[in-house]
Length: 276
Image (cartoon, rainbow, N blue to C red; front, side, top):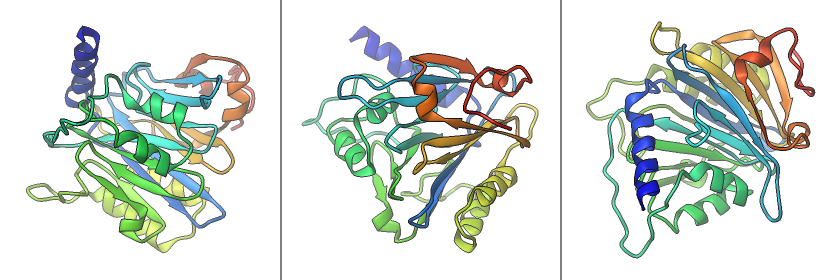
């Protein structure tokens, strides 16, 4: 019980105290290609990492990313499932269901290890009260092009939106933008997604136009996840000229390991399966 309370406090502190209020996540699919774009924004001085976990027994292999291994921002698995959280500007008190247990831990690793599709994630999260998630909403997407937005109190499905794309920033899409300024990053992503074909160049353009460049809150790293092909394009410090393409399958063959994102962009980087 003590460990659970401590982890919950750490999770709350992560979302409340770190300047993560400018993250932008978006997805789109045309049936042939399914992509997710992601700008992770915070203090430029933070160290950020990739953590790779090979599959074992009945569990999927996956990668997570962020500042702290026990509190990753998000990740993707070898089945083509993506998960990433965006902090909310305002806390939404959780409505607990007394018939469900509280989930004692951070949910992203469990979802990536056990699920292959958005449907499976939703069935899994519905079994628990997501007690750490008062101030975060999660975009999940899978290789088929399905997606959902998940908060502890609500789930918005692709079938609800009836379109092949969705952007998420830092206001609740369920409760709307009452008493908040319109989000230009959200509007930019939605406009470009709605008018263009799904492609890596498009997603790169959206990442660039929604990146933050303030001294105390800037885009630290960005990704474009190609869910059908099991790879992701990686960028750092809102520089979209240098691009690395990482094969998840290749990295998982190396066993469990981590790497600091900054070090991948040096001339002597040693991760194979990447290119610039």
